[in-house]
Length: 143
Image (cartoon, rainbow, N blue to C red; front, top):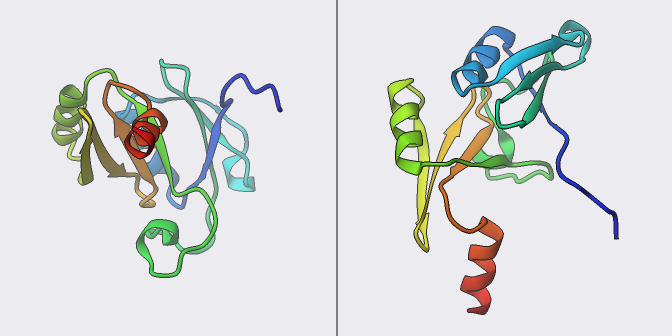
C-alpha cells in the first residue's frame, strides 16, 4: 500500500484566467503565485483551509462545457471536486448572495450537499457537516 498522507493540490485547466481567478477568490482562495499561466504552468491558489488548487491554462478547446458531466458521451477523467464545509446552510446563503448558481442538491442521511460550477463548468460539490460521503454510501449499501 502507498503511504498517502493527503492531497497536495488539484489542477484544473481553465479557459478564462480573469473569470476563473475571480470565481475562486469569491470562494476564499488567494492567488499566491503565477507559475507561468500563459505557458501552461499553474496559477497557485490557496484557501485558508489549506486546500491548494492550480489553475492551468490556457485551455485551447472545449471552453464553457465539461463533457465529463454534461454530455451523453462519458470520457474518463475527474468529474468534480468535493469539499467539506462547516455549515451547509451558511454555505448555501453565501453562494446565493455571491450570485453563484446552484446546479444540483442532495440530502443523504442528514448530510446536505449542493453543487456549483466554475466559469468552465467544472463541478464543485460542497458537502455539509457529517460523516464522509464514502462512509454514508458504505453504510447505505451495507447497513
